Length: 258
Image (tube, rainbow, N blue to C red; front, top):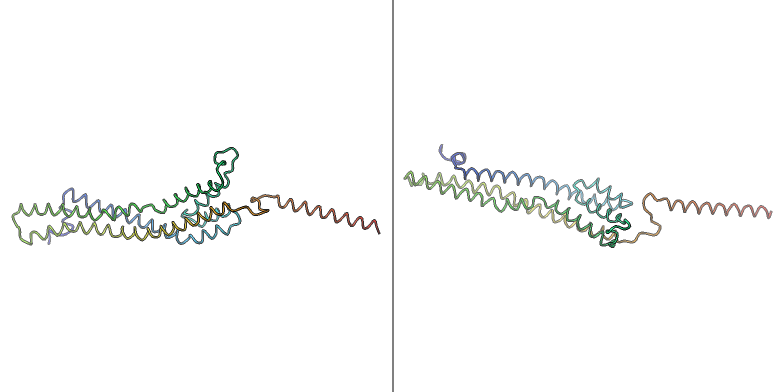
């Protein structure tokens, strides 16, 4: 067995065999890197989503909710939607083209673009995993077919057609098919498992976008003002001053009567 084996096959292979082996190695490294990074991002986003959304809706104002969401949503999956809603609601600039669009349509447009950006962020690497999972077995099969072709050619030149002379070289070439399957199987499993998690997060994003749109269209409660406004305090102070003046006047009149 000194002249057979995987190492012997790879060392004695021609340029096509070496290229197929290096291509499978590159595909394996790419799929594992994409798999690990994507799994980390999706897992963190899925685990922090309930807390991040809860912190947003518990904030007193939309601006405070966006700030709380930025702190909780470190992967920036839900934050772009809240930022888009805030920017669209603050876009009432007189004379601007955007100000002529109705409030609901303006918010809907901003949320749609933000939702697409977040979904693209979640779906990164899916095409790569699908491509590697579907093509790696055929790349390995190409190496096997090419190796068998050259192995049979060498056997024919040597004139030895015994089972021992055929089994060794042909068996070595089958390792390329095994390499292709080793590369493809993790990529296919990762594509299916992570794809399901991405769809779940996509449903959460869609629900959050609908809630933001409903919030943007809801009427402002009576007496509510923008953060930092001093109008309610001033009105209360004026009323208090009027009441104090009326009370002092009543006391003065009663004193005169006495």
